Image (cartoon, rainbow, N blue to C red; front, side, top):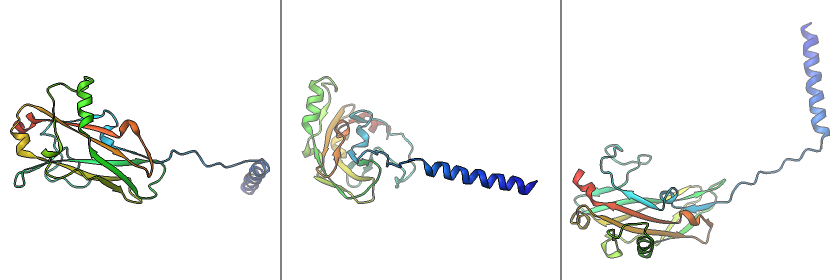
Amino acid sequence: MKSLKNIAFVCAGIYAVLAVSSCDVKIVDAGYPSQKIYLPAAVESNIYTVDQANISTGSTPTTGNPYQFLIDYDEGTFTIPLSIYRSGINNDGAVNVDVWLDEELVYDTILDGGLSDDVEVITGDILLEDVPSKVVIPDGQSSALFNVVLDYYYLLDRPDRQMAFGISIDTDDRELNEEASRLIVVIDTSIFDEL
């Protein structure tokens, strides 16, 4: 009886293979989206607010342990880490991305009512290090990091204010996600009261 069941099972398998192979079946690659480049902090909103000092991220920021900012009291720096990402089916090829401080973006957003008139625009002369003009997402990687380094004591001398800078990106190497290619970072200096 057991061998009869095995024979029936094998015959059913052969029948299924013959039935499928006799059909005109075509296998087509799915249409996956091409790579797009974007600022992940700009995905939900083009305004990224740094307003909480007591977010626990561990004692020392490490890879995989994000932080909104880092203060180096010895150097007098206030560093905001940002990144550029690529989406798509793969991470093939290096991508050169142009990056710049975009003061006009902040001024336009204030005029359009997206930011309060009280917001002070952070200009390039307040930066302790230039924003890198080019960031490269390496071949095989999905992102590249860069820092915006501000004068900590300049910010500390402006209590209870909102200060903002704009960052924009562009690339000729891949398609740009226009909706997430411009970002305004707003720093609420009242966070220094919590430190």
